[in-house]
Image (cartoon, rainbow, N blue to C red):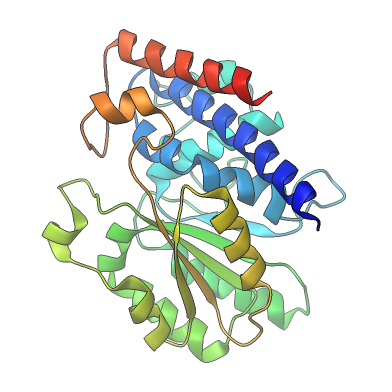
Length: 279
């Protein structure tokens, strides 16, 4: 790919990431939610859903994606709304009584492979799926997003031991390494660093990247395809509300937020301005 084509791809993905961020704010401003994480993960979502995963003949994906940390479903909702799989009007019922748009979705809901309410389950399920697909001779690649707080769960490391032993090179783990969990900073609750070195000791190829840099994300996904004898782990350093400057400056570094309408309106206006500048 020429440099000009690469630059065009990055710009297109930046536009998509901005649209995802706008959807996240639109959805969460109804009743509050995990907007900070959804906004911060928009760059990863844009690269994953609109460049990395291959399409299937039925219009969905040939490759498979597992969300482990259910609260980050807001990222998937935002991305699938850009694709047109969800209507924004339906997504505005997020966390409403009686809605099917759950904060932590259940298995079988569009875009979600597993029930994601219990944290730390995704890595082991992904490893099992990757092993199964390889046993069947399929070329599907399996992706899983989970959080740094989930690294405090023992079954994550059992999964890492299994994946490393089985050399599951068809699997990519994406870690949202934002140093934040429900009860405080991850490093204060139960420190998990150094994350890449720990996964490497289990036989994985691990790389730390800026999870808000589309060029770095694309480069990591490309590198993963060159690793043929190990699982690939992307340790993505992200920051809450990255990409929405007004909210990043005004809102607390919180796991869950419910703010005044004026704050959400300011974020939406900033996203509209960024879209206008990019298009």
